[in-house]
Length: 188
Image (cartoon, rainbow, N blue to C red; front, side, top):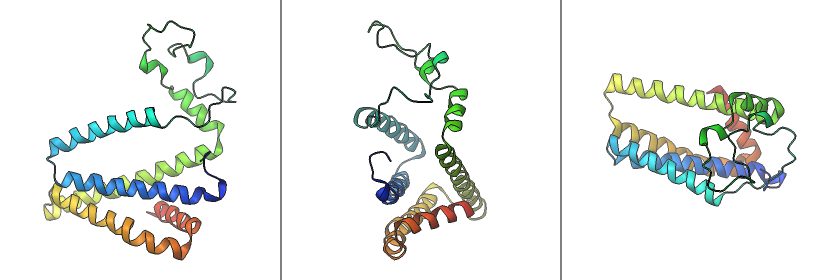
């Protein structure tokens, strides 16, 4: 958001949502043609690849050492590698991760961040609940297998991403479409 002018943030989040929807469709489509064991192996490999990609090609755009509320508190940074330390020393990975207290401090420090986290949590909770109950019902009632689940998910993903969104975006406008999407996601 810090790299996008305020007037264009709605379209940037819309594009990000579209990319997420396309990724969902592509991931679901690929599972249609893979075995269950291969699906988890490919998923793991892609997760590792995306983590490396983000680390290498997506540096933080705002580097500010004068943050009012750092993510890792001063007293708990024992495991964080210091720039003055010897380069041969190994950094302990899990001690550099923020603790639960640090995460709570981050949520308390920014009202906007807290509200975004709450919206994301309930939106994902609703999505997971709907998908899990629907897939369980289809398996129990109609004996669906993974290929039929994948077909169904691809159809709904393509319908939403490629058919519905291009029709609604010009008609409603980007900001109104995002508001409608958030409303229906909350109601969902």
